[in-house]
Length: 193
Image (cartoon, rainbow, N blue to C red; front, side):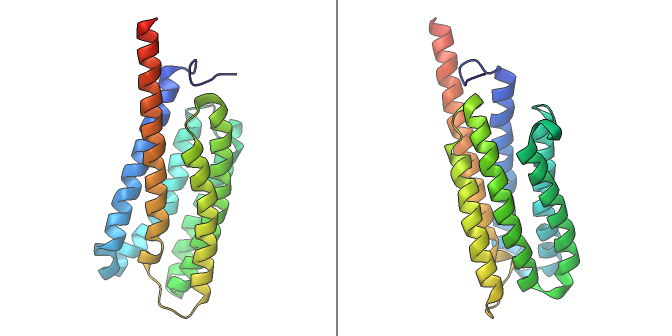
């Protein structure tokens, strides 16, 4: 079994880069959701489809770096759920934001469970995964909140999904920073030896 100290540097470097990329994409999505997309419904519609589609692509690319989807069951399931979510969101947009929020709520719960499982699996090899595990658990809570909000009569919009994406961005950033720090420490120890 590999640990953070003997995991190949390209693997650790990929994971760090991947987490920074996930942070950047989510941060831009959140910024647009809270600003321009609230006033431009066609942009909001594209963003609502793109968010789970991007999650699917990201899981596919990440799993590909460590043996593919078949070797990484939690990412395979996350990929599948995210693809289905993007399709269902596209089909549901014409029915209104309450229905879209329901779809996002179910997706947040399922993808959170799969992210949690991926974080637990990766902890054994890379360490620094507590933020991903916490993010997965919090995703489930966010999904439950979205489902309850979707069931209410209060108006909803893309801004009701943006906090979920913002927390995801934060956790990806924390994970990337933790891997950066642990990598620097590992490098310093290797240089001193």
